[in-house]
Each structure stands twice: as structure tokens, then as C-alpha cells.
Length: 106
Image (tube, rainbow, N blue to C red; front, side, top):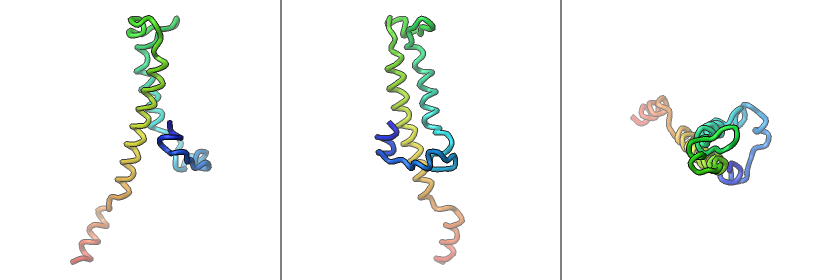
């Protein structure tokens, strides 16, 4: 998902191994999508160890589909939102620069 849809086949390999690099020490979007996915797939589990409500009603284990699709979609949404926020923060003019520009114009 990340390689093909988010980064479109391009990684900075050196930054993967540097905590202060482009990718950081932890991928918050990935961890968040994983944890939410784990919580939301539990009702669909049907195993000898645990059986969720929906898994018991269905009579079979559907959790692997939910655990594959839901976190992937969440990860895509989280990373797109983070990139939008980052690009918006880069294009914003700091208030001190706006004040300086208005003083120079007058």
C-alpha cells in the first residue's frame, strides 16, 4: 500500500534507517491504522481461542478480510491527510513575514 499508492514506488533508503530522517522513528499513520484495525476486527473472529459476536453469528472467521482491508484504507486516508496538512503548513506565510511585508509596502 505505502510503496505503490502513497510513495509511488520511491523511497529515500538512507532516511528509512535514520530516526531524524524523512520518515521519522515511527510511522504514526501506520501504527494508528494497525491498532484501529485490530480493535475493529475482533467482532469478526471465530477461533478456538476467541469468538467475536459477528463471527459467532456467521459461523466462520471473517476477521482476516476486515484486518486486511480496513487498516489499508485507514492508512491511505491518514497519510493523505498528513500530507495535506504538511503542504498547507509549508505554504502558509508566518505572521511575522506578513507584518514585515505590509510595513515594506506602506
